[in-house]
Figure (tube, rainbow, N blue to C red):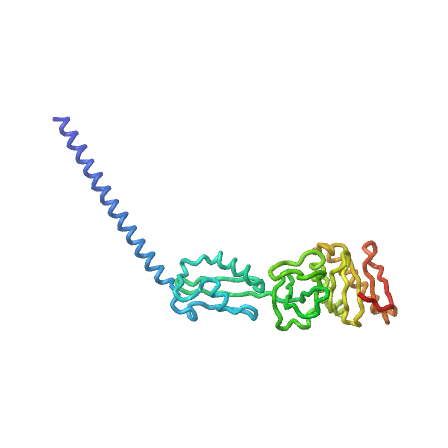
Length: 277
């Protein structure tokens, strides 16, 4: 009698377990079905039906917003939930050097806002022997890109050999030194130097054409090949000495200035003769 009772209890428990498993399976299937339905509904809400309304682009002057939006995959029928914005952003930055940064903001479920930060040209780029405008410019980060609009009055960095630093690349060595030289001459107390052009073709110094009187200045400083914030002080000191020399009686009629003495930045030499480069 006891044995049969135990067997009946055991069988009852087994049946309950089986029922519980079936119920759990059914509940799991229901949850999965509900999740799939919600996911499908969510995806439907993320579809771009009207790009002009659902996509806002704050663009600049060099790269139009619709070009960037298309490159990001933001076109009619696209699903925002399926776009890898990080990968697309990196691709756009690589393709368009004139763009410094892109900010992408999702407004769920089906709106997106794009802000484009463009680079600001601070100098034009050219090569020795080339008189025409290459259209290449460089920003303060040293990144070269294409821009012809409103750049005609910018000073020129003239590299030694064609084709020079290409768009999308960063200036290095003396080319970067020339950029820092131009930026330093924009300081309020040095603006009278009025740099027109900086030739970097010589291996150990820069040759600058100064708009103040169209004289030429040969200059070098500690850190010319690898300019940093730490070496900027030497450059500023030499430029101040050059400015003071140009203001002095010695400056009248001087055609060539020499500020290449690395051992003594106070030594500024003047040559009254014309120079042929």
